[in-house]
Image (cartoon, rainbow, N blue to C red):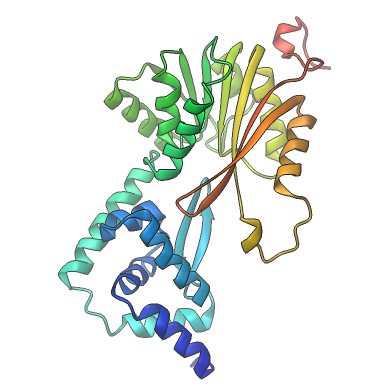
Length: 310
């Protein structure tokens, strides 16, 4: 049996002792869910749900979990907090009509996310593109990643030929369904290994793109390779938008080794791309850096240089 200090118990009781937060705890105890899923389930605005989640996270009852390109929330994995939540929810009638409705709505939301659900973050990124005038769209557009269908709509809806590379079969199906519903002319390709586009996938997509959009690209060692492949897909004078998530500096518990803006500029430079601007975007509790870049003069796409890489 786990025992805790009275002050910690009071903190947990205050966090959980509110109707909406109790409903959120009930949902998060059944699986990891996004802000959009939870907002849809509770029929409350995403900012309001985000505030409730922040209280639960600060109390240590709920934790943020990044799953692929999404941020989800689940009950804390800590033994004491998890034990408290289990004991609390054991007193709740799970047959309550409101809780049953919440569960059904949240489940519908997770199915939608499999194909890329619309969200406040996606709308914010699409609006940023439109405000920037969709730089580099004299030629076709390549969208790498389809987590945010709003980006697909912004690119294809502007009348440009559009190709999208999806990281999985389900993501590709969701993107095709969204394009069909909105009447968008867009070719959707699926990455063949299911983990993300590689050199062969880029070859299938083609080259000479006036604009390449990287929707939450792969992290770690795969990112420099992806940036180089995206650079090679650009036409002369083409531009690249990169949308990369990061943890807000003010909430990071670990020491910051390299500032996110400096890191992003370095990665773009190493890939032969000149960064023109970086804009922070925040929505759905997620922080994103939106970087606009173009191919450096000395790094023209290899396909246009008439030779193969050495």
